[in-house]
Figure (spheres, one colour):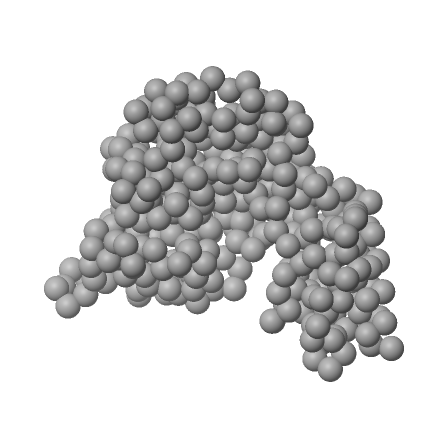
Length: 345
């Protein structure tokens, strides 16, 4: 179908013409041997930008988080994370399956874990228990920006109990842009309290492949070994690093457009019978169907109208990205209104 508006995820973005040119012109080597100049330059650049000693370019956010968990924790040890955190609930149980690492999921609603719950979950030094080694947070979480005050309190609590800290910052630049001011300076402040951070370039930033894991030199050395063991060693990866570098140069500040389009979409849908529409969370909008009013096949009805999204149980998710214009956002919102209204009539 022509003119499909794909709001399933910001992972569906396609490389721009300028990004494809940057990829074609990349100087490459063998990254497994450590001599791909484009990869090396990008790793060094991002590490300097975000204030870490070292960085590692990997194929995906899942691989980045897994390398972090395997590097921070040993077999029979434990990490603490939210029960809906991506690295716990949506990454195939890799840390448990491949590293013998026990997750300790805690309840949360907005990406924050109750500090008392964190402290209660930290195990005493007793052979009956897995050793607590790591606290993991996510920012943004389902599009929600985690408040800096909370991050400071949670990471301070972790340090008090000698836990390392990891940030799943897949959409960290969305949080930085939402904070206003210089987004690069904002990004550095967001990641500063953590021992390691994963940043994804294939979501809102629009690169076709790639995430970066950052941390100490020793930590990244260990993560590099795990990347190899996981089959993540790539050869002439400079073509992919060039795409991510282009995204860092050209696609960070424009994330504000995605946030504005999400807000417009939510505003147009506000009050539509059959859907309880929440506010825009950076580049995401969630809508909960009203039982008996919203048809159970709404996803299929919307797809027939040219609007793709995900969910429905318990809510729909609409994600805005660089391949969705303001006109697309407005058109999609009206198509959702019309489809829901027609089904409720």
